[in-house]
Length: 382
Ligand code: ATP
Ligand code: MG
Image 1 (tube, rainbow, N blue to C red):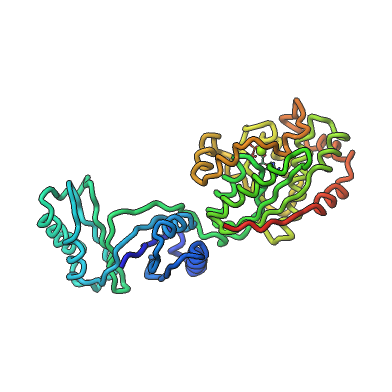
Image 2: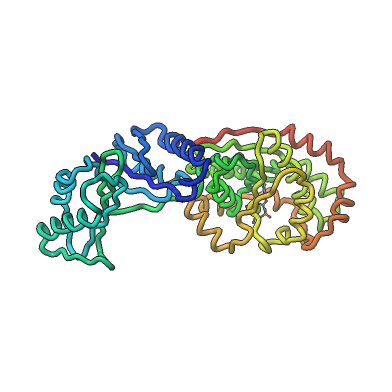
């Protein structure tokens, strides 16, 4: 029977919390395959998906489940030498090869070496252009004998995302703009086991409705990995108009970001989320210097702010954006609220006292309440 053999990260195979990770992974796999025909069974350090008819779809979805390191489309046979040999006698092989055997079931009567030698012999007998090369073979035929009384035969492994099962690290609020960096930041943190909700600020009518649509598309793309993303959309128009009319222009971005962070913290706490995530990268723009981040982060009192792109070059961020297929959407040319009223010379090393002084020109509580009152929630699903 054709099945898909799934391998999980070593990291959580050990330790007392192992069952929590295993259960989460099991449930996440089921969820990712929703709507498709499949069966899922656990066996000693492996998971096996069977009973499918759309192999391509199943493989594609499984490749996006965090916590899986690799998978193989395999033939499942009884762990019986006769059965295994029968399969090997059908293998066509041109060029050099080796047979790799892992024996997870020590009750199996032959050693791994004996099985490999036996099966290698069968391939040599049936293929006149085949030769054994243990060190640099063109083909590797794998036999994985498991304790469930089955053997899995395959010749390829597909790399998966790695990481930790979604949700096992808690939940976080992603500040999602329409840009390249924040979807990447969300993906990277989700990969470490964080369930995501997202928060987007728009400045309609200064920003277009398409800009908002774009963010929904990005959230939808993240759902390929997270199944769902609850997207909070908040109007930032009034906040920006007020800052623009009352604060020093060079502090516009600093103050905007401080207010974004305050709103993010309120929403995150309300939703029971344990962190805020941004797509900032050190030195990328004026608002992403250490001093800017210090002044921005200063308003967040009770949560950590995660910036997984902080040490990445733009090129590296772009390559992840392409990997998760957000790049083409991110580069669509719609205005972000950060580009509305953009000052010519934003301060690069803002001082906290000065930012606080500028903010005294504003009725912060009223502005934040007004922004929160505009909140819309869009439940995005894969
Ligand atoms: P990105 O590519 O993610 O837009 P960026 O390089 O354009 O990032 P900034 O515009 O300085 O950088 O934004 C830094 C971070 O602030 C973003 O990565 C995102 O997390 C958050 N952010 C910016 N604008 C918004 C917005 N309109 N709504 C929500 N979060 C935002
Ligand atoms: Mg941006």
